[in-house]
Length: 116
Length: 112
Image 1 (cartoon, each protein chain N blue to C red):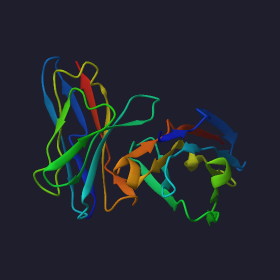
Image 2: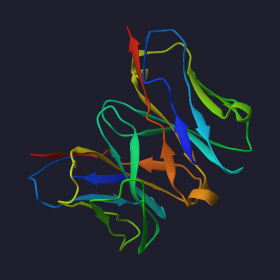
Image 3: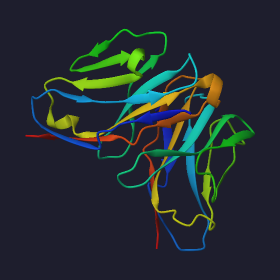
Image 4: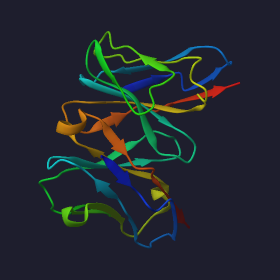
């Protein structure tokens, strides 16, 4: 069954520390897509990254980086030199177009607190 | 401006009343979605639609109804059959299968 697990419910780190948010997924298909979204206190979900199952290259965007490992079914997100503005809830999500007909399933999210 | 517009931002409902949340997009997206988020919880899929005049139930469709008469619009009605409607409701839209979906700002519904 399609499933996304974010085992870390809440994380607190001091500003400038690095932090990694874990995401483990289950899928029945060889073609799937993984996403990360950020939800600041305002509530709107902001898209961060999309990765397809055939591209295992890690990606870096500024202070953000993503580590996709099919062998462990993980798609972890690291923030380097964290800032207070990074405080938010972060969601990992999975889409299996051929199996679940466009359903996109989200994990329960990880609430990140960056302490000044 | 292009984007997804949800209204109202805040809505109060008396028990036994139906309410409708609006979702409009001008991104020319084929697919639209409604998610429910409870405090401290993740997102759960209520309904989604891949094309006009067609929609599918998500994981928690009971007590909700939708329509998709126009590509741009996907309103959600929270009926009196929904026992615990107080939540944050998020509308999203996207293009073809597997592509990114984008979210509106959300609507807070409170039953009083």
